[in-house]
Length: 463
Ligand code: LLP
Image (cartoon, rainbow, N blue to C red; front, side):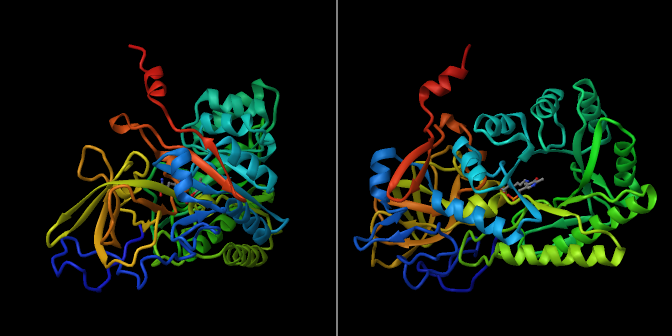
């Protein structure tokens, strides 16, 4: 996703098959604070520590690979988002990035709401005690069971995504004698990419109801005509790992445009808008993410300006950051198994995990950084590729990175910014056992999601 080419020279000469790599930092032991969780530091002994815990101790106690999460950093990021948006807005954490009971409790305690997009995520939220009115249910094909469970639980918001779903939610709510608050997910004609956005005339993707062509306006008519539904607002989500605020501004403008049309046609001022998630984080030092207060200001200003121009009362704003909250809070700790130098090319460093714990490199060509975590080293930088132990050559964790040339089996590596969409997208490919998530705080570490066992695998295999 974030990908930049750099002209600096490699250690092994000029032969670089793909030509994309981050230049060696002047000091391989240094840690860029934008990429690492807040409490990560290199101790006097040279090893990394997080939340006051030495990673060598974590590896000993919990094994590798493991996702190590800085609980204080997670909580601090929640607070930063809440404070940036203030009391007149709501921050819904997008659970798809990473969800567990502990995370739900942290969110609850820090005053965030929760966006879930499946029955499983809803069950986790409810099991951990998130008040249902602070939950929003998403999804482009929610089952009747999922809708029923959400309405029964009393979720604060269902974001409807199609005409069929409007009818389904209305039916379930009527049957249960409820009036269910809903938002309509619209596609605003803005397709956001990593560093750019492309305005498209019409949308060609599965989510939402298009503003262009009047589907969104028709959805508003239908919802307003149904007794068992309460239309509270309009929802838009334009993409993920976005750095440029321009896409959000176009989205906000178009959503307010629809609110204006709704007021003019129906005499109703909808009280809420949700502009989704998608704010980018730093995976490498090349990425330059926006801070929550900059995002809150940019979105708040545009919504206020557009509403004033249209003579609308400013609706209550909500946002749904997932990656921007959890992404930077965790790193993956691996142990090096083999180091294989391909003369004139690069060195392949195999770790004890891979595409089963981080599919993002293979799937999106995502860039990550990596550091030697169990010790400091003054050795020369060595152009490396960190790969996993799976049976395919695309099993790459970090495509291009410089690691010290004295790297050896048994060393620990840490790959930062793996809190979002790594554990949540992990698989059992090659019957790999999915790694645990270890939460570290104030010198204490505890498992919040345990490592899978072979028994877990065999339990599902009932043949
Ligand atoms: N709200 C809605 C409606 C969404 O669909 C998403 C993400 C979010 C919020 C949160 O987006 P975030 O702030 O985390 O970017 N697996 C991909 C990302 C898929 C995101 C899907 N929707 C990845 O690993 O990059």
